[in-house]
Length: 210
Ligand SMILES: O=C(O)c1ccccc1NCC(=O)[C@H](O)[C@H](O)COP(=O)(O)O
Image 1 (spheres, helix red, strand yellow):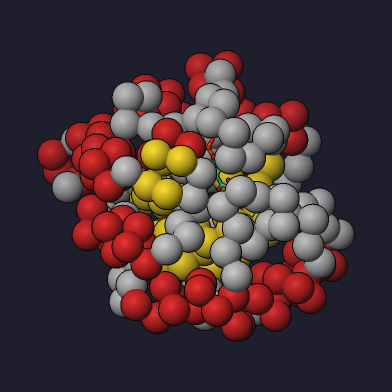
Image 2 (cartoon, protein in one colour):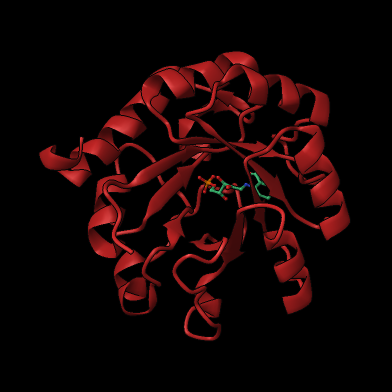
């Protein structure tokens, strides 16, 4: 599958104002983190309010870590999510079950590349390569990962306005995701940084894709 332009997800959205500025900046999706360990955690009621407010053209991706597939399904319904992003290691049966209800972003680390089957085009599972500690702002070694980076996968890990073009040029991900580099403090975005991030991705894609 070829991708018209690099998709952008702004993760760790905890409030309506940040959600609306991400939408206005042209983000394709926002991330709503339910992982109990996160400093950017949101509850289902607040997430649902945001989901309903951003409109149909912005994806709402729920982010989960240390949570069972049952919890994911319950929260996805309660928060009106359009996709779920999973940082856990599930069984093949659990991945298949989840993917029969929602588009799934399955997060993998550099050590997983080359060790697992890449989802077939048209599958409802999309891979996302992220740093071993999610939400920590740590960039990966993009040139070293180039040979093993799966076609159609997304990229996260320490991305921001100043380095996302370099990452896109090295790996050509289908989408990019960021949080730490766009915040004034955990869970609160700087709208100017969000705009700069989206613009940097669009510039990296080139004029024909904007
Ligand atoms: O960001 C968190 O607090 C977080 C906590 C637990 C699981 C996932 C989490 N974030 C997931 C994301 O999609 C982040 O945007 C991604 O890890 C990139 O983060 P950063 O390197 O800070 O840009």
